Length: 425
Image 1 (cartoon, rainbow, N blue to C red):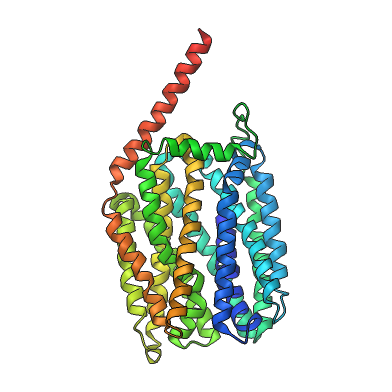
Image 2 (tube, rainbow, N blue to C red):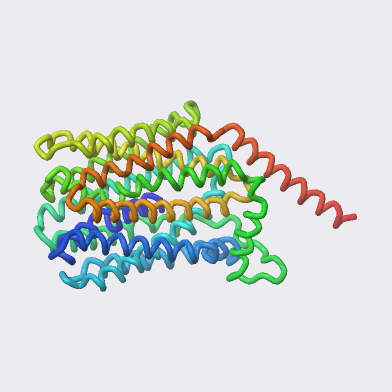
């Protein structure tokens, strides 16, 4: 259910509505500057999250208060959503500050939510659980988007976007509540190692993992590849709104419908992945998604505005690929993670997505700066990541990665058993 609320917040606030409001109304005199400031806000946020992630992970595992901390991030998202809707035209600095703060609450909440996943899912079911979570998430995004689209179709200009922000905040408020009512923490607290504090233990765990990187080489090789290809997806996710409008010469109403079509297709993509991922293989699902993204984005780069009917197909393909790629990528991390390291490695997954966002945003801004007004080249540049990711993924062995995770888990259990026997003796 938190995925249901979380994805709505990400799609409606962080990706679509406020991006459009910021670029076209807050920084109305220069759209290119608006996109650059938007990208700067995102990059700043990703860097901050990367730096504080070890502390956030330590809080999740050692504080015994994941649920309370998740509630704080949830409240911060709701409050800052309402604040975003009140940013007046011309107040770009205020908009950036509020956006960065709101995204920090959102990203931290995602980390705490990721720490729940290993507690609530068996290792062998990680793929299905991940797919189910993304299916629910995109469904929440679609419901929230539908309300937002209706609002900005009914109320023109800044008013529509502001009301959409308020609506998204209320939706997030109601949709996430069941998580705090019905989900219980199973593993309340881990004991801190001797001499460590809640501030330092996360950094020590990261250092310890990297010292054993050969043991987890399958996972870290995959994380590097995932960081690369997800950078291409970030180009579409973070800039899909304004670039899609320029590329297809869309009116705001058409753009809203385009985003809703993408969200609906993402539900189908995630659900289809949930049904067939185990039969096809998670790695093969990722390869299929990368082929789909490569074809769609390169084709989209050459669609003329007068061929507007084709943008529906592009929107559907973009969403379907997003559902496939997001679901299968997170599932692969779960399958390659030893049971006792799952929470920590999902933290690395979060780090990889943040780095990919920085790469994608940086390339987008660079491309737009070098080829001003050539939005087709900005979109086509995502193909660099998808094609490169496709080639690199061919070297990933899913069977070996799963076996390595199982062996690491068994070795951990044996060590603890031997330690317990020694103490009894």
